[in-house]
Image (cartoon, rainbow, N blue to C red; front, side):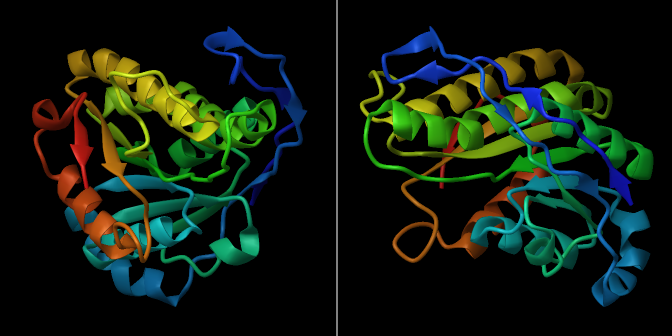
Length: 254
C-alpha cells in the first residue's frame, strides 16, 4: 500500500559558519511510504501484541542498531513499525510493519505519521536511529550530515509529537560522545549531533506536561569498537519500561 509524498523544501539548516545561522533550503525527492508485507515471524508474534500493547516506531531500521532493536522488541512481543529508505533491505528486518520514507522530507514524515496512525491508532514510542558520519568541519560535510542527523529528527518530531503527547509517549535518539555540552562543536558531525540533542531537549520540555519523555543516549560509536548493537537494543528496551519522569530530558551514557 502506497501513500505518495511530493518533494518539499526542508526546514532551516545550520552551517559550519555558525551554530545558529540559517542555511538555504534544498529540495529533495520524497520516497513513497510503503506498508511492507508481513512475514512469517509476524504470525508467531501476533498473539503477544494484544498482551504487551507497546507500539514502537523504529527509524533507521535497516542499520545494525535498528535491526538489533527491532528484533529485540519483536522478541518481547511489541508491535514494531520499522522505517527505512530501502524497501529490499527493510524486508529483512523483524517488524510488524515496514514503511519506506525519506524522513529528510517533512511531507514524507507527515505521510508516515498518518499511515502509522491509520494502522495502529497510537504511537507509544519512537526510537530514532537514523545515523551517518562524515569527517571535517566544512559546508560539504554539513550538507551531507544535516539531512540525516537533524532534519530527519526535526521532521519526525513535527509529524509525531501530537500522537506522543496523546499517548504519554516517548522518543529517544543516540548521540555521540563527540558532543561536549559545555563547549562549541569543532566538527560538522559534532555540531549536527549537538543540534539533534537540542531538538530532543526542547521536546522533553513540551512532553513533560503530557507525562511523556524524550531522552538522549550517548555512545562513542556503535559496532565492534564501541557499543554492540545488541547492547544498545537491550538498553533501549529497558528505557521503555522506566518511569517517564526519570528519563525525560536525560542524557544517558551507554
